[in-house]
Image (cartoon, rainbow, N blue to C red):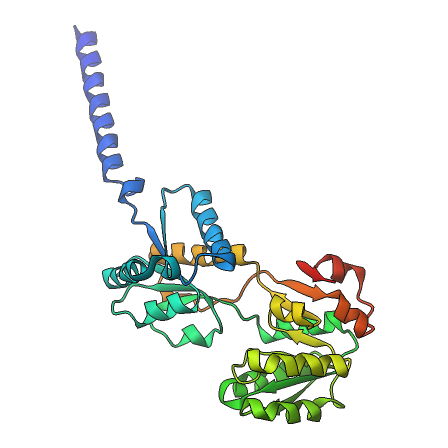
Length: 319
């Protein structure tokens, strides 16, 4: 009799334990249906933008935590994508991930306090002064850019750069300090308007070993590209361009980004914010991978004998 009572008591106790476990599981937030999706709004939905989205998606899939992704394009989605962006910004709490300048600008200007994770912003200062926003910018640190100049043209001592002081005064001051530490010298010439460009180039011709491009709306544009590339060709002066399109047109090389990894970097940042991390503790980051494009035809014209590892390591080579 005692044995039967003990058996019944054990079964009752096990029933209580099982029911308690079920109740805990039901209250747990791990189920995917209780996880709000990550909203991604892109400026476009092709090329590098598509690669960035692929990087975001890979991170979510690898986490296997029930995270879902909803992607909207301003280009193909039109007003519907804009409405999604505005609603997400107003909802608050869950971060909104934007890709490209147009999407980021629209998110930052929209009312609401949802955190914004911006991918492909141009410079850190584009985000550093914006409340509740962070992300990964396109521009590499100045030190990285100058170190790569030394790799491509090891004998370069004087680095020429053209800039509009209204946009890049602080950047040039910092570049001079870094170059000095690296045993180089930055020779900078101010360009206040595109018409000033020819004179500034001529002024640099006999003073520098290489022309270095920094992002500058006055100096580097479709209107000025031909003059800069022609100057580089005629003076047999290496020109470090801004992107693969500049290299294809005749620049020696340009540092580029691994856009899929850029997306992964942004997704990891968004997940931290989604888990409760304050954006103020996540300053704007730079790309963690450096790739580059190279123009071998230009290298031959410049009579540069590039190391084999430099040629082999290029993400794209123009011949």
